[in-house]
Structures are given as structure tokens and as C-alpha cells.
Length: 245
Figure 1 (cartoon, rainbow, N blue to C red):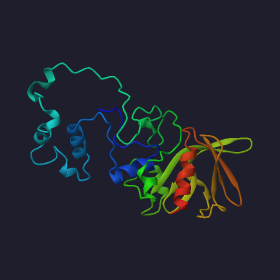
Figure 2 (figure 1 turned 180 degrees about the horizontal axis):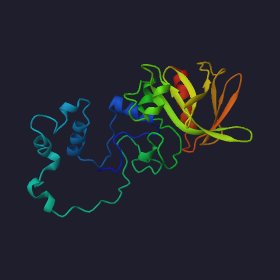
Figure 3 (figure 1 turned 120 degrees about the horizontal axis):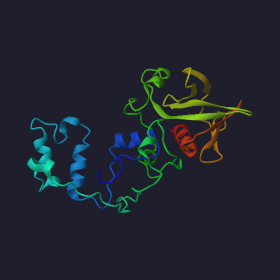
Figure 4 (figure 1 turned 60 degrees about the vertical axis):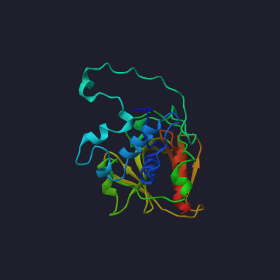
């Protein structure tokens, strides 16, 4: 509410979960110390330790220094403050919090505007050099869970068009930590193809021809996909990152 964006922001579901798991919270420079402290406490990994969740209820939350001067008893009768204009400020680590490419609807595969599809090089996932299992599958539609083995997690998922010479068909492209790379008919809910995984780039590689178009190449076939959300580079980075583990 203070910044107009989520505390965990990135270009894909997988990268967002890496920030959550790592508790990688990045505050804009204009946040006060009281605001930083309050948000940091509210995002405690242990819900029972968050202000307002203890035996004293909301009293602990209301007493936080961030709310100094607030008259809670007459709050409903007060005139609400005006919305602040965008400041154009950046976070202390250089991330632009007014990035027009970000839209909360980018999470999952609901309707969303297009993003540039380029994964932020400053993400904790890339800098740490490893891929961590998703914290939860709950953010994805449960119907895709039937395609996962026990303990298997989705690293990347997107509704894309599988391009053929004279036609195209929508499929759900899914990459898991097994690793497994499949595409599913979203209406019939059946696996239409299993792309044989290999850590060898000669046997499995991704070619990006535009922000939305990419090819997954294997010795036997080349599959062309079009991602309307322009995440072609994202697919390439995640697949290659998994190969390099």
C-alpha cells in the first residue's frame, strides 16, 4: 500500500517464490525506518510472531511506532488522506518500483498485460546459483497438480501456443524440478508431449527469436512456442539454470 507494489516482485512465479523463500524484501528509499520495521515484522516467516497474531490481538499492532499519532477510537470518523502521486523513487538496491512492466496479474496464468519477459539479473535465485523447490503449489490451478509426482514441484508454467507449419494450438507448458518438461492439452487435460530432458545443451537447448517466440531443440525435433506474456527469455534462463545445477 505504501509503494503500490508487492513486497516480493519478480518476472515469474518461480522467481517470486525464490524471493519469498529467501525472505528477500527490498524497500524503496523513501520508506521510513518505522515502515520498514513494521513490514519486516508483518512478513515474519512464522505467522504466530507477526504483530497482531499474539494473545494481545491487534493491540500490539496498533502500538507500533509506525502508527504514532493515530486515534484509533475515532478512525472511522476521520477524513481519509489523499492518495500520494507516484514518486518515481527507486529501491535502495536499484530496482525500479515504478516498472510499468509489472502487473500483479502476471502471477500464474490469469489474464495479464505483457511484460518484457527478461528475468531480473539481480534476483536472489540467479545470484545464489541454485534452484529451490517451490514453497507451495497453491498459487497454481490445482488441475495441473495431477501431472506432478509426489514431492515434485513446478518451476515454470505458462499457457503458450505450440506453433506448427499451418496451425497453432494452445498448450500448458510445464517445467518441474524433477526435471520434467511437458506440454498439456488444457481442455482435455492430457499430456500431449514429453520433451526428453538433458543437462547437455547439445541434446536440449532453447533458442529465442523474439520476446514471445522461442524454440526448444532436441536431436529428434524442434518445437516452436509463442508466449503471449512475452516470457521467452524467461523460459530460456530457467531451463538453462536447471541444466547448470
